Length: 256
Image (cartoon, rainbow, N blue to C red; front, side):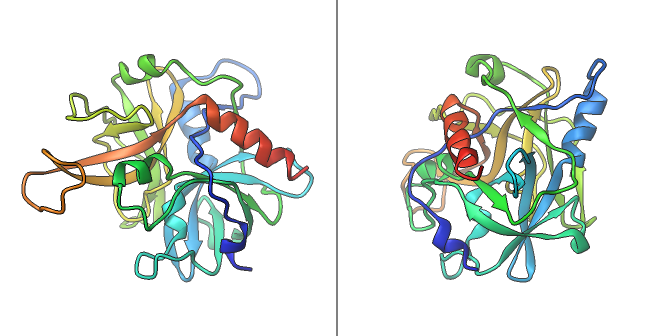
């Protein structure tokens, strides 16, 4: 089935996720391990396009993942790929097809790249439940300023050279940029092909804080300029906010 039939056109934010524990005290190491074990790759029309995270399987027939919306679009045609699936832990033989997408505001035709990045996130219901571990949603997102004042950051994403999902070395937030977006995190974490949609998390707070979207090419004097000189390259991710919690609950409830 075509993914395009399930798209809607409202903006969503990002879900704030806290690891589900089975008892005992959580540590940085086991939380990172749980995020890693709940991650997978997005495979569309013959190639790995990005990374996703398994966040829910409370509905009767579906698991739900979260990823960056742009990974579902063909760059050349600016249309949705015809066929997409999720590979838990990048295991090809366990791939599960997409069933439905949540509403979102992402458009490949949008030439305002800041706005496009702010809407670059989507929930996906799969055709069946996964046996893979899950990260559950928290009821309340973290304080936005507390998140931005944090230092240690990591991304969990597909590594195209090793052909596996990896936890990055510790990286950090990029501060002091020439503009402000309350919906984006700017970071210097190592990324590459297939890393879009990977979870960003603050290591010292043990919290997942966003979804990596890609790299913005920003002219220092004019954000919409078509010039190529004086370009700043900023890796960005869609930050967590309360709006997404409501969007996710609405999407999940519609699958019950």
